[in-house]
Length: 417
Image (cartoon, rainbow, N blue to C red):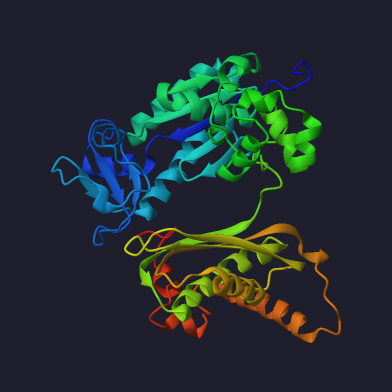
């Protein structure tokens, strides 16, 4: 199965506890031994833990995603607000360091704290790949005082799996095709496998598949019948096979445009909830238009306030034709909200546009003047926002008490600069 595959030298680099590590550098703390929590907003008891240092996780059980009020009141714990501008600057400097070892074409930035590096063919310059990886880690420690972990594999998938499953504990790990039966197949539950979310896991469980080994030995025909092209990918990924080029999308068929938001307070009135939903729809429609995409399926998730009953709902609905029109996406969200919202106070909202196709496939009748006008209007607004900033053109509702777009424009990634 593997004899004709390229044996590349792909590295997946992860900056361990990146936000906490950057904050520790500023404060002169040891991120590996001092309990540090990066809090989105310390003034709010419900402020989210954006990052937790290893010591905080081990000593106090605090995990990313928890709330400020869930952190023990202990003087040993350092609570620090994020400095997103600084984190982005550090991330850019890290990429410049990697560029000293390989050309920029051999670097794929996966996120602010994770990158893929293709070290294939660098042995004549830097020596054995494992030694080069250790040298890069030493450079990161010396220049930035930042710890890192690296997974090495013959493709992007195995490098990522080596990182997530082994290297985050050991610092560095190399996986080969020969390691797959012993290291990959025992992995369970299936959501631990990169690219498998909770919904896909449930479907696979319903098919009697509970580990990556089960998936690898399942019928390819059965998987393709159930998942389409994604079934083919699941099967071959379970065997560690990934033919994607550096920077390509690893899991096809899953792309969507989405955005979620945790509200600063409980939203009770329908009009207030719809104001934020409209702002979110503006964002995802703009991203879809700029990518030349349109979608048929709109998904709305609503989380209720824990002060009430908690819970919420998540529903989707498809349209007869694809769209990237803000108001059409919003109209679908409004229908879902009116149908499934039980009146409880809302604290979380997310919207996504899926089932994508290329924009030029959209049916635009020459006699449908409204559709043409809305398409042109969307393009003009996008251009103005790109040139003058996200608040250059806003809907009137964004200036109401319920609106969040003005305040969020002052943030980076939803957090303080």
